[in-house]
Length: 154
Ligand SMILES: O=c1ccn([C@H]2C[C@H](O)[C@@H](COP(=O)(O)OP(=O)(O)OP(=O)(O)O)O2)c(=O)[nH]1
Image (cartoon, rainbow, N blue to C red; front, side):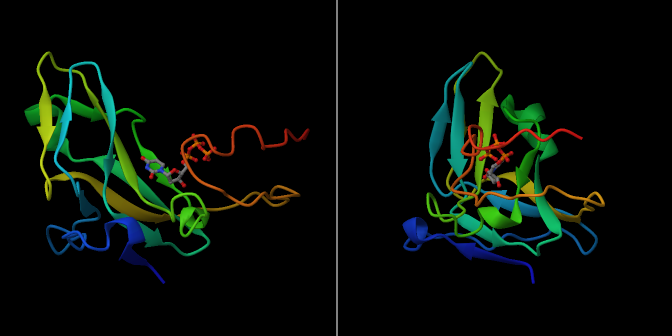
């Protein structure tokens, strides 16, 4: 089952349900839940107020909307976001989907509450035949697993 839900921290906010713009659009538009100003050269995490229930064999890719760079001088600092199924309800931030935006322009860029900045696409993925022998539990996001991943020889 796939589902977007509001995270507790933003339950009293007007969080819009992500929508696909047209019948055949792949991406669910994701909006900011706060007014945010990003200075030139700065990166800010844009809160969406959302978490996503994702089937085990799927991932939610977060892509920028094409107007972001053209009209606002903003880009996703990570290029593409990878939201793992086990990010949902993690103990650090409940699986809050954030969009890291970098202002590459020479002027302040503002993102308004309710403004759609990115789009999420659900995609199925495959695993290798042996897969990884051991898995750690995800505690959060954005580098949370950096120190815990064991390197395995082939
Ligand atoms: O644009 C993004 C990218 C990631 N995430 C969340 C969901 C994802 O499951 C988690 C970890 O992302 P990723 O695995 O790409 O980051 P990492 O730098 O490898 O961190 P970690 O060590 O936590 O896996 O952060 C977002 O909310 N937005």
